[in-house]
Image (cartoon, rainbow, N blue to C red; front, side):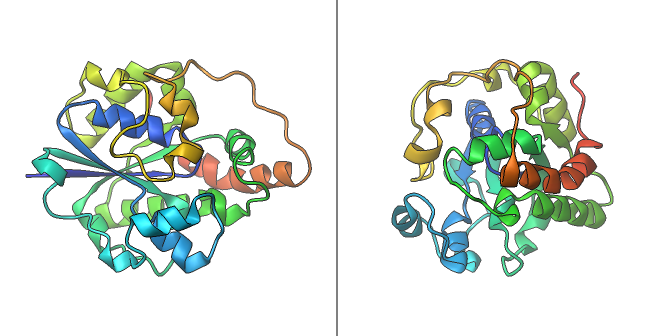
Length: 241
């Protein structure tokens, strides 16, 4: 039986490194942001490599396949989802066949990282409110709180945090998750040349982060506007084992 893991993240949340960690297990297929093209087609946003993204995935969200057997018949199927992609009209019925987890990051760090790639984002593009809404939906439907991991905690203590996450998902931990080969991956989304340069240079999780960066003006207001949603999810975050 395939175990499907839906990881819900906003942008610049260590989400690609986490995808690489699961792919490195050896028993896990991965899918990279399957609703990205549908999101761009619906919103009309002019993201980098827009034409290439639209050509690489279904533009109809109903045509995205996330159930059934994992690609290649793998025992685990890790699905990397961006919360901002899940617009109200996106289908959610497939979610009942997944185990869910949430990857969070402090809003100041998210904004500081995101604006290096795309200037002047709005709050919806950062995905915090949608992430909280999806978290509450899953908790209500399943009757239990889904696991939450903070990217800062993972960078500070990768093995304990990955052990805790695997335990919460009821899958075995393997030390293979701590390292992966540097460079692009065959399963990367077509947008990888724009967004994945740092993780392509890595072969494991980066060291612990330093002090929070300093934001000002609109960027500071964006981060402040996301704090309530981040704090609500952070109150449930896992501790390492």
